[in-house]
Length: 407
Image 1: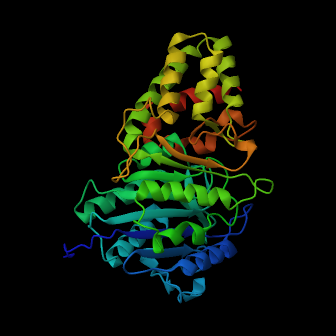
Image 2: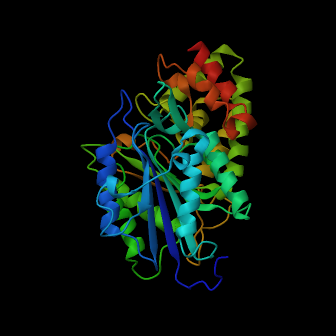
Image 3: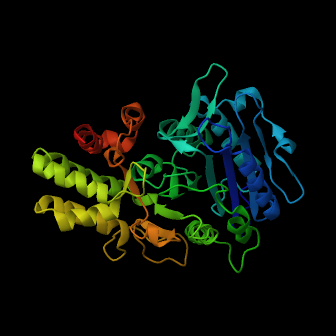
């Protein structure tokens, strides 16, 4: 049984789950994983303030490895402990579940109100899954986000704390600051830290981001303060002329309200596009709100603004304005303030950073709209998309696939 004699100083446990398998058609990730491991080693774990745990999957034919990262060990992926076969299986999230459970078990402060936790999912993400690898029979395995939910649900049940949540679920991966992801993860995490657009290799600057947890200035940062810190450190690490980046911290404590407002907008739009002229207008508004070339996503706040200024339907205007204001207007928000004694009122998009004028229309959170990418094969991803809680509780999938079918 864990001790209840908890210290007053908060401690962070950071768990980085890395899908570094080489995937045909995608950039290799093993070197990037080594570089990130070195950045984490530069910071190192500290028994009083910070634990950093990593598990790395390099493909079906290479043993998965895991370990606690300190300043003097490990120095390379192969220095990490080899993970047993049962704990390395990516199918159904078994590997992730085992990694989280053993990491939290190894952390001294698990169960303490002063124990903050962050899980980072690292790797290529597309078709609503992350950490893909090719198996020996030629099939592709990945952790899809319905499976991710089940992993986190299992951990809640096994911990004896059904309502227990990670403080932050973060993604060092592309295009995951979405409405769908927020609504999927809400029961299992308090905040979501992701990018709306592509994340360049080498990804997060872990040395800059984690350094302040190991060497705090004043009080140890709470999750919202750390999320804001991470957004700024990530965006400043990239020269805008070389690569545009963006990172967002979302308040999952208010994801249910997000879902209800998006549900209302989907309902009125799905009804309105029965008129072909309205359908064409709505379709074009979506295209104008695309997050970037080749991305099957639109920026939600930008979409709402474009609908307000383009539509002559009061129902559409009211629903779009209600959702857009909820996302970015702190005075229009009625949700809870940020955690800790240094609380201030913030909107659902609690922190949003970007480094280029090319990302000026981004406001922090996206939503799926496949028709904005010409000739996209959306049928193959549709079954995965239908597994989201958001799509099952709203008419959004019906709406966007009608637009895709007629494009």
